[in-house]
Length: 180
Image (spheres, one colour):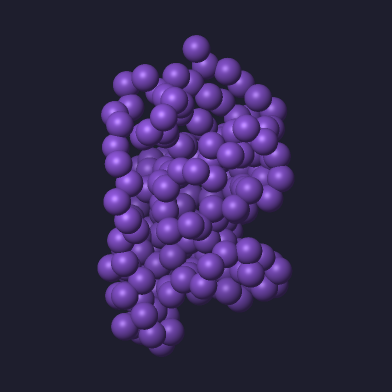
C-alpha cells in the first residue's frame, strides 16, 4: 500500500543511496513528457527535502528546458533487489550551469565527470512509496563507461561545440538555457 511522507527519512535515504539507477520525469504545459534514466553516482541528498544531481552531456537536454517553463519534477527509484519498493520524490527543480555562481558552490559534491553540463537542484515536497511487487529482480553488473570515454575524447572544446549543435534547443524546439 502506498504511503506519503513530507521528507526523506534516514531509512528512505539509505534506500536511495543503494540504487544504481533512478528516473527523472518533467513536462512543460504542452508537448512531450520527458522521462530519463540516470546513474553514474550522480545524485546527492542534501537534506530531507532537497536533492541534487549532476547531469552530463547527452543527446537531448529536455529536463533543463522543461524546468525553465514548468519547475515540477518527479524522481523515481525502484528496488531491483531485496524488498520490493518504488519511491518517488515530487518537487520543484532548477538548474545550475557552469557559468552560474551556484555551480562552484555545489560541484564538489560530485565526482568529476567529463561532459558535466548542469546541476539540478530539487526541493522535495512529497515523498511517496509504493509496493513495487511487479518490478523484476535484476542484477547489477557494472557502470557503462561509453559516455565518459566519448566526452573525454571530445574534450572541453568538443563538448562546447556539441552543446551548441545538439543541446541549445529541446526536442520540442524550446530553448534549454545551456549557453546562458
